Image (cartoon, rainbow over all chains, first blue to last red; front, top):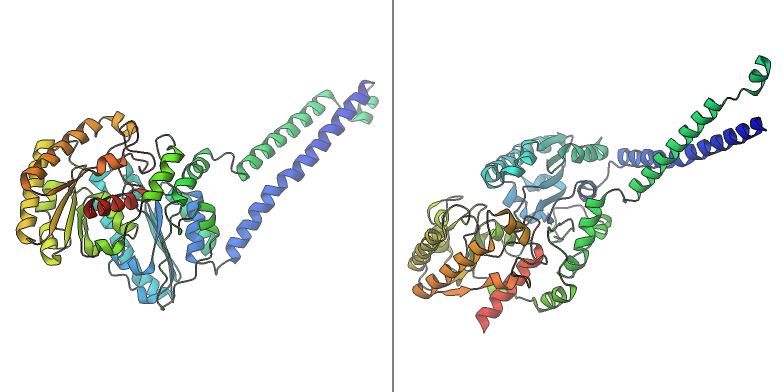
Length: 171
Length: 297
């Protein structure tokens, strides 16, 4: 009798384990699919990329700036070489958070834009260093990077997570 | 006996081990499911839920977070770019939710004509930077700097301009000055009020045909007040001095502060950024509406 009980319990456990494995595979598949899509989606727009970042790393009072306004924030940026862009900032002025993703016609144009983005970062550092010292860590860990014809700029509460998402799109 | 054990291949310890493994897997699955459905992200979800209603009432271009993320944005071309600046709702507030009825009434009454302010100049601190950041006005009509106070507005240059030289060059029809929030914690209300009086005189000297409006500094939230650095006692004390200064100088005082307060006298959650001092996007429209109505009366 005991053997039968043991066997029944074991079978139940195995069934549960098997079903658990089935259930557990769904998120894994989803993750794999998302990753696959991200890698394949090299034609993703800049807005799609920033939207994905904001979904995981929110910015207070996030507001997307227009193409026309870019020179106000990125002094020296040659907007004529841009073919796509998305730039979100904390519009209230309370926090230094912002994300920009720029796509240029070629990697040379992208490289030429990097100094303008670095200048923006330096301006923000100078502005916020004494204004909100508790927010300064976002700027200290800010990321300005070029990936081929893309340039991205990240000032958020979790810069590495934001960059991970962007790299998922850009490879 | 030994043969019997081998044949069965089952022992109590193996059974228990299997059960534990299965239970662990089940718990993990439940956690993963909750995470995937967003139930394990209370901060993000709460932020979105809190702001959906009020922000969606700002304008017809306001969208919820979900809509914004799903929205297809055309890649920018060399053609005339479309002005599609949009609110994406990730704002947080540290106060309790505003009364929905009060919010609706306030939003419905908020209306202003951008043309009304077409020849005007706004001088202010980080709060006024939102006028440009949110796209209400272009930077030519806003002299605003993060950290600006009544003294530095007179003395400091930014991009080659002080507020005085900016006004002198623009010769605006009206000048709206809102300064003082940055100095509350360390400058002293009397000193700031005196600096504002000097600023008014200097602006009047270079812009004799301009109407000058001194705007009260905005309230702070109850939570911000509790921190003690900037309190409503300080805000009200400074605004009282400003009002008296305006009477002495013969310029108009605009009491924006009372327009942004809730029923308890603190910065309303309808308009307050999470830090308790800055403006949400809703507040700018409310402010401009108040300015226009106050001046037209």
